[in-house]
Image (cartoon, rainbow, N blue to C red; front, side, top):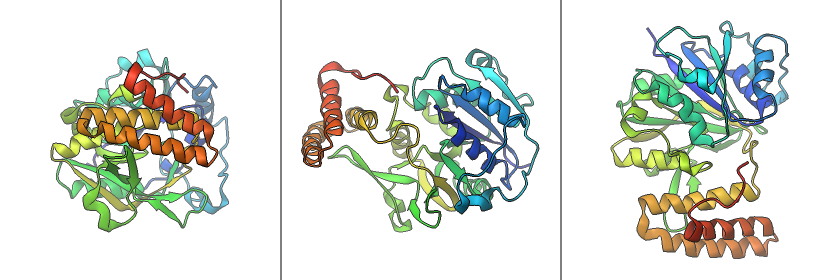
Length: 331
């Protein structure tokens, strides 16, 4: 029997993106999977909209003509679904039969890691695979099949990424879904070629595939990061404990790029703050270098008249050094 894959998607306000992602998953040639969508308290009726779509009350039309081929074939299996509150999810027995799609309404928005962890903690005793997938991704019909095959031909301790192509320009590869950490600047750079695979420090949480045993072995993602660097820190710990980080290049996903939060003040703030937190937790001696690098980033953003983003770097650095906690409202 083929291995069961749990696909975990955290939705925040972008139910139309999530619906498109789900439509692409329903055409997967690998059919032994279950999808769990965690709505991080979107407060825009995301769960109801998705339930209406799943029940056939709301039609889907591909908004991108360049990717129409992903939806031209019929669904490979019947869509069954249920909706749960966070409290009801806690009582679920994952060993019992379940519908193809489970929609979960979280009580609060505690961030990316916490949203994923709501369900990941249910899988710690299972022998299954986990695919963390961003809602602004759509996938090729063979993507999941390639990931499972790749995982089955690797050692048990492996974390896989996918080839990430542009949603708007589908022939263009954005990156290989993995990155390298610059410990002196507190920044990351994405891997773009197979020759860089040996240098991978983390797999992007936008499309991260591994076994449930990995979370049992390493623990769940750190929830205090709230946004950005969660999977970076988790993968970095995994690498230090002998895990192999690799990209399955035949597994293709298409990325809309930061549709949930964008690239403004909040994104800059949490990226900067959590880079410092990551460095303090894992590379403590490098903190002064990252702080100095942040001063250079402020100067660069100011020179480009990006005053809001420059302020975000200043505030994040200040909050790390003096407050110890975020000083802005969560998105």
